[in-house]
Length: 598
Image (cartoon, rainbow, N blue to C red):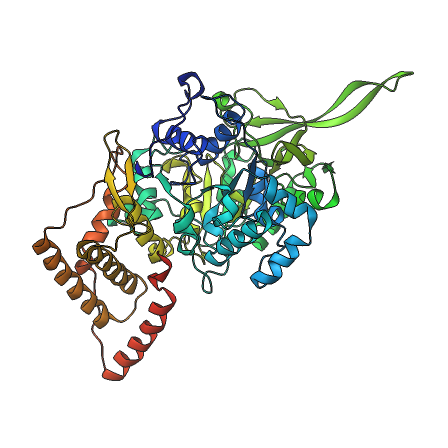
């Protein structure tokens, strides 16, 4: 675990309340309950949603005299918000799509009584899937909050809790935007950063965990590439999803694979086509939506449960809620519609007793020996302690295919991943990490070039892992094992400046090589980095320590950082080509400027 805190948590959770949390997760919850602005991150399947559940539940307890606070849970996307029972950050903030000038957004919020009231009443603001928020939006939200609350502090003095993995899906307009951690406000408000390391989703498959750790940082080893190639589907053009993914002998069993695609069009076509192939009549289940007003009710369009669910006997489905962890009935569990049963329940209108008849699906899940009659479930959206909207629907969706974006947060036992249309950083990693074990993973269109991590994200996590420098603070190991943060009004020392410059130069080297930029300038950066090493050694700069109780995860990351010289640097064929590539590199370096790190 890598952790950087201003001070140890002042709130201690009773052991009986923390028995389902590991040491890392417990530290996050205690830091938040202690009132610290906290960023926690980690790989897919490390329990980030589990932590959010505990924060909300324990907020109601009287812990060492702590007063209950109003927590507002938000996320950067509608689907992520609905998965955690919250709303989108845009809706909470009252900023629409948030793309106007800051003066316009402030005027828009201040002219909206409900939006202003939401900001004023909020004590703790949670923002999930922070990786998809841009630096510009992060700074805008801080200014809007300060104005709405009439408080000049960042985010108007609200306690901020942000979580997510920057190695996963980035901001939509990444070519034009920077990551949230590059925002000017980030360094002023985030003073506790905790990196989770223990992975639960693939915890029993050490080889798969190692491959995913490498894929996350964009550094697959030759052995990992060979293993993934072995899991590639060799058929050039399968006749149908059923033949390619389910298999002839398994069409009537639950042993099917869920196809993960990169684009919506392919997913929608395949789900409709496969359902149409089944014999029998379609049974439609229509959701019942409620909300305290139309604005909150409109948020239900992002709900994971569809407004209309069409099923047939034999249809492949995915569960959309955690029903029973012990039986493996969790979000993403696969099943087959075994039957559509007519149910009668008594209905009393005060005068007569009648029986109401309706249809429910009986599902045979892969993880459960017995079939289960599935009743409607209420998907809720909360604003603090108030439920503002809900959708009542059978917690299922067709399980033939999903997009990478729609499967984020899911645990799927058997997956067939098509990487042919991969177009974004982190997209392949998100898809691969849905699987629970290597033997249940099938691939199509695998190319090591698809497994890529953004160089700026690599640099950011390198800083977190080494605890070497963040926000121009010095981090030192405290007696209790937590990295404490010592700030000073005095200027940085020469040794500290050398360390900052060295980290930045090394980051430029990694970027130039990763992005295929000008090799000659990359070599110059390597030379500068080596000179910096000589200066550093002669100055006797002490290495700053970090808490790390993980036995794996980061070894492969540091190995790639330590040896940029080992990368293959191509030679130029002509001076004109060299000049052209140098100009292109200069432009890209400007876009990837490290000035966002404060």
